[in-house]
Length: 370
Image 1 (tube, rainbow, N blue to C red):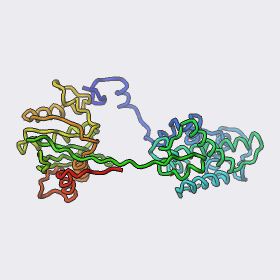
Image 2: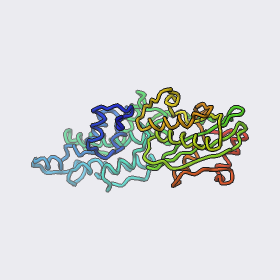
Image 3: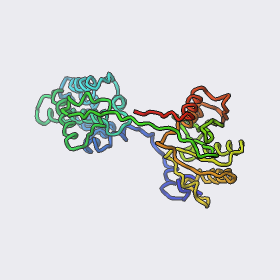
Image 4: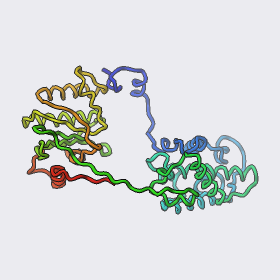
């Protein structure tokens, strides 16, 4: 069985990925490639980050003999000066920094570090689009000055950026959701912003059938630490037992399998027979229903076999948690990330916050989400 592949089968592609030398993953290159950003501009930003632009300093480095001078001041020309620290660039960045109320502009920062101050993880968001457009139109303004003898002006760059945002909106490449938390800037780009009314919905934990117990399971990941949590309650919603603990060197599928195993072992230790196991709706339950030992992940093969062995004496069923909510188990899984070893809980040693969740769910008090 080949552990480097999800299905346990050997392939040259997976073997190559094991042995090849990989560079550090940089999220900035993932963010600049998106349909909201025209491909030409994404390529330009990629070239700028790799210093592949034909500025005077790069031309001199290649062996060309020329007198270097910025198109907007007496400074020699280089990529950083054209795109970040030149007079036109400074005024442009300062304008949009003030418009978005970021207070992050510092022209001493390297280009990659400076862009990271703007970029956020939500792909296609306006905060990711704007800096790419600014870099692009600063470069076009520089080229217009060189080849058409037109004086560089930051107002031209600002207006070009605004026009481009409006054009992207007009062709449905930008949407309301791309302006999340920044709807106040829409009027500056001439974009009508629809008023979004927050939706309210409620959900509650569902008790198991009569004479059954329910085991709620979840896992949590915090940076490089992960944990699991499980809680057992009877058909009246009364708390029976719980467990939590840390998990090491696991992916999501292996983590959830280990959590289910620990939960089933706890059920066996207190002689529970009729059991409903409730997990997040992101868990693939088909691997537990196979009669033969089959698994889509080689790392979980023996874990699933052990889980099935543990459940031989149980009258059990699996189900996904309603509305994707599993609050007590979620809280325990988060606690598990902070523990150094597995820990079992009864009512006497339950943390106060967990007791609060348990009492609310026993009394069928709904949670409300906005």
